[in-house]
Structures are given as structure tokens and as C-alpha cells.
Length: 310
Ligand SMILES: Nc1ncnc2c1ncn2[C@@H]1O[C@H](COP(=O)(O)OP(=O)(O)OP(=O)(O)O)[C@@H](O)[C@H]1O
View 1: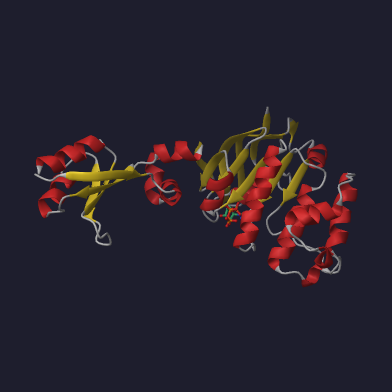
View 2 (view 1 turned 180 degrees about the horizontal axis):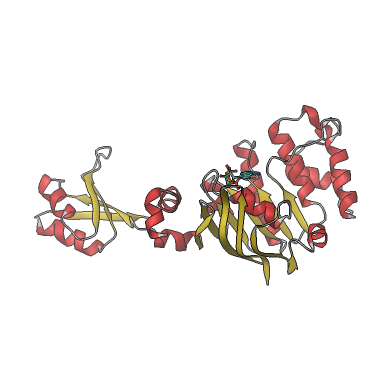
């Protein structure tokens, strides 16, 4: 079953087209990362899913219900960490949590929730006005977890968290998924997405430019693989021979390496590169390949060049 189905959705703010004919499906039980550079349309999309704003065109269903006309019923079954959501300065953390429990009619143990998000019980009894950004973020996350939601929607959940907090957040996302919940979260921190997501969607200028597993995205990125080839000696002839091979975009000696290593980027055949080097009189002692990093994948989908291929 689909947890979120976004179908041909657009949103205009005056002259600005924030989201442009975007379609996207998040399956039940999956952890889906919604990626894109600043201003790409992530928050606008999430705010339409949550019925905080109304689409100019298109349809959205959440847990099989219409996001706009059945938003009340939807809210009962989802947990949300919206972007830029603030705590109430004069209420304690615990009061925030009690409010969330009451409004959902849930009976989770507040201390267990505080423990899960790493908020000390003493801190929970302080007023949220004195919280650090990270503490406020942890509290908001605890509120999102109330009532074991079927779907968690987290907009930039690691904002304000230190590296430990970010790691704990990832663990929490996995725990929720293991419990059977669907998790949809936006981020521009690629490492976090890589670590927890089953699939990602990349949005750029309001368009969805990719929707796939991380592996699938890697495979689809041109620029291909990087070969690290250890030779008996890296000579100018060897570099030139590698550069002349079809599909090779770059070949250079790894100056930082203590071994005689040639680094070759290619979209073509690895064997052709090795044969060309042997043809130039070199001996290949060893070689390894490196996949495109997630940074490269992201860059490839979100820079000017991508517009042509997207
Ligand atoms: N209320 C609004 N009025 C006018 N323009 C808006 C409004 N909300 C968003 N926009 C515009 O829509 C575009 C998409 O913004 P959005 O906040 O959805 O991006 P985002 O991907 O969430 O970015 P970020 O990563 O910076 O949070 C931007 O050009 C933004 O200026």
C-alpha cells in the first residue's frame, strides 16, 4: 500500500513556481529521503502533504486518505516534525509532551519517549524557552513519536543536532521503520540519507529529477567509476594512453600516493583502460574501483548540467 501518493502537484506563490507537476510515491514501511538543494521545493511539498498549504494543482493522498479533505483523520495517524516549528517558551518540555499525548488521545509513557530522544528528565521539567536548539529539536521529535504513528514526516530533522544527536536520530528512524512505520524525511545532508533511506527522491527547481534507491542513483550517474590502478611506473605515455581510451574523462597520477598509482575516471570499459596501459608497455600490479560518492550523485542531479539530462 502507498503511504503517500503525490500526483501531478504544483504550487505557485505569485510568480514563483515552488513545486511544478511533481509526482511521487512512498510505499508503506519504507524510509524515504526527500533531497534537494535550498529552495528546491521540499518544505512546500511537505506542507501540502500536511495540508498546511493548498496545492495549485494535483492530488495528494496520505495513508489512503485525501490530504486536503480528510486532513483531520490523517493527522491522527501521522507524526510530524515540521520545519521551523517552535516550542512555547513558557511551557516545560513535559507539558509539551502532555499536550501532544492529549491531543492524540495517546497513552505512551512520557519518560520512555524522553529517553528515546535523549532528553534528560530534569531538562524535561525546565521551561522550553531555555532550551538549546538541539534540545528543542529532540523535544519536537518526542512529540512526533507520540501515539506510534503509521507515518512520520520529518522536515530537516537533524537541524540543530550535534553529530551524536544526528546519529541518534538516524537510529530512531530505523527503529520506527522496524516497528512498521513509514518515514518520509527531507534533508540536504546526504550522509544521513545514505545511512537510513531505502529510497530517495531528488527535487530541483520544483521538479522531481530522480527517484530511486541509493544504489540505483549511483548506477545512473554519468561520470561512472573511478579506477585506481597501480603500475610498475606511472609514465607520461601511460597517462596519455589511458586518456585516449573511449569513455575516459580524466586520468592522472595520484600525487598523494606513495605507490605508482594512476587514477582514471571512466564511463566506459575498465578492461579497455587496462589493455591500453599494457599496450603502452606498463605492468598493472593491482587495481580497484570506487563508486561515485553520494555527493557526486547529488551534484550530478542538482547542478546546471543535470537540467539537460533530467
Ligand atoms: N510562502 C511563500 N511565499 C512565496 N514564495 C515561497 C513561499 N514558500 C516558499 N516559497 C518559494 O518556493 C521555493 C521553494 O521553497 P521551499 O521552502 O519549498 O524549498 P526547500 O527545498 O524546502 O528549501 P530549504 O532546503 O532551503 O528549506 C523557493 O523559491 C521559495 O522562495
